[in-house]
Image (cartoon, rainbow, N blue to C red):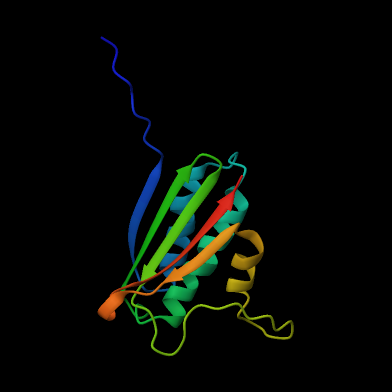
Length: 135
């Protein structure tokens, strides 16, 4: 009798504190998961940095709340999900202001990710920004 072996895709789930220092932790863990030779390495590390920074700076998770990041490697794609407490002020959106000193994170996500979106939590649940980088 032969049994089929199921392949489990590499996956990382990490809960971070909503503080600036967590951005470097997120980058480090993604670097470990992907390895420098991965074809999507640079794009995914950059976008993780931008999205986790947005969670720390612009969401209710800033100031020490929880930010959860999941990274999953699939066939030809890296999926990243970052969940936070959301913000009553606005949802993540693309700003294209070339003279601004900040605010380019979602512009980079839109530019480098094959697909991305935002899932708003129901009844005060977490907001999740996700993106996929193809390779």
